[in-house]
Amino acid sequence: MSLLKKVKYCVITLSLILSSNLIQAQITNDITHDEAFKALQAAKKKAEDSNILVNIAIVDAGANLKAFIRMDESFLGSIDVAIKKAKTARYFNIDTGKLGELTQPGGIIYNIEHSNGGLITFPGGLPIKNKDGKIIGAIGVSGGTIEQDRAIASVGAKAITY
Figure 1 (tube, rainbow, N blue to C red):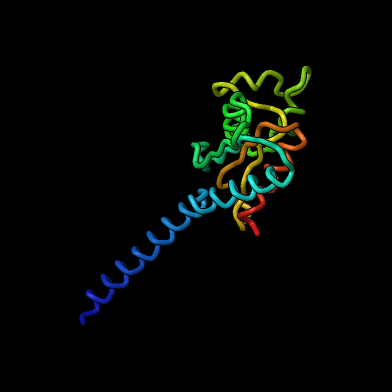
Figure 2 (cartoon, rainbow, N blue to C red):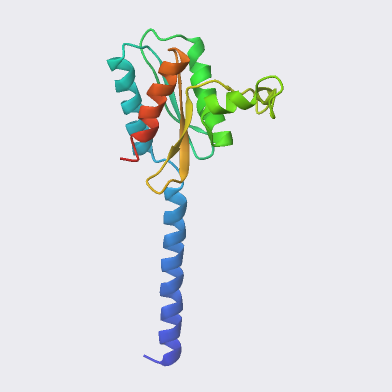
């Protein structure tokens, strides 16, 4: 094989390796279906063990709905709240309860909940991180008290990092 052909072969091989690594990096920065389902199932089990009827939403890195469950007899009004908690957590990469502390009258982002088609700024929405600490999505839970919603969301968010 000539030197020119060897160089071309090396360049093509290197290009394929770099492309593959770039694609893999993009894939790992978004929650997979399996990860979303695992988070959803873990949160659902926590809710069942606690005897709490909730709606649970998982969004991907782009805040698009990836997985959802409405437990039998949970509040219909909580469907939208769970989805908005997940989206809010992803939009701002923060626990929705922590965001709520900043949105109180006199707070630095008072009234932000009126942006983005409506946000939820009370507990129950959490970012989901991968094993490397990169945010890949978020979870929102609604139907219990805010403390219960946060606890259930926390179990779901942590399910894929262990």
